Structures are given as structure tokens and as C-alpha cells.
Image (cartoon, rainbow, N blue to C red):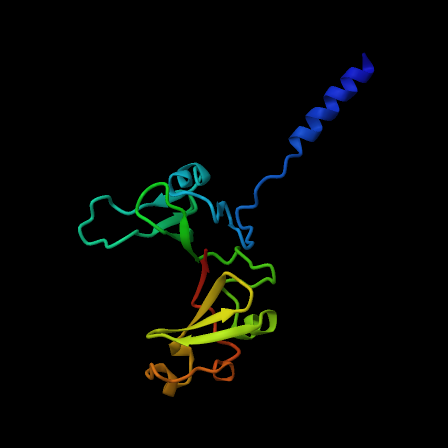
Length: 181
């Protein structure tokens, strides 16, 4: 009888040790609760303890899928999710990170500087956009942006200028972090 009780106790202990999903985990296939195969209709269940702001159906001004925003119950903006299509079975195409508790495998967050990014990752390209410099890193499915206001004045208004890594100040902060699946 003691052996049976010990076995039952061991099973209960092992069952209660189930690993809980880290809501800020970030890997190639996962950002928090969202994976590269998560469908829009699953978001309500995944974020049952948080708040989702979904686009208004039938909005005459929307063209294509609209963003879904994820907020903690306390009001902190966590993520912005962009589906591939407008239907509920669509998966997520882009995720924009808003909370610095999300960290890449190399410890980069939305609060990181350009120096921290360039020390952690190999920069593969820098694109000159209207308001931002888009920094792409090798072998990853995410990219960063730096607000052009943090660049030298001659680069801020020249859309044709080629932005080199050496032109971005080390202390320039990340403006956006976006994952693309």
C-alpha cells in the first residue's frame, strides 16, 4: 500500500511540474504566446488574461488586414500583430514588439542601442526609409529600425543616401523591432 501511495504522489508531483509558457519567450518560431502557425481566431484563448484590440469589421477605410494590438490587463502595450489575410484562419505575418521584456536570444530589447545590436549580430543591410533606417541582421527573421532623427542631419532628409553602419551613432536607440514570418 505504501508503494502505491508513493507512486501516486510521484505522479502528482511530476504532473504539477509541467513547464509553463514564458509569455516573453522569443525564438525563431515564437514570440510570447504567438507562434509562426498561430491563427487569428486562437488569439482570444492565448491572451485570455490580457486585452486584444481588433479592427472593426466592415471598416470602409481599411485596405487589407488590420493590426491587432495586445495589451496587458494593466494597460502596457505588448505587441502589435499583423495577419497575412483578413479572415480568422489567417496566420500572423508581422509582430511589432513594444515591451522590453521581450528579448532576442542575444539579449537585445526595444531599449537596446545600435552598438548593442551591432555587437550582438552581423548587420546584413541598412535600408534608408522616409522616417527610419531599417537594420537587417544576418540569419534572423527580425529587423530593427532607428529613427532618422538620431542620424546626422545630412542623412535625415536624403532618401537616396546610402546609410553605412559607421554613420549610425552607437547610442542611437531602437525605434521598432519587427518579426517577419
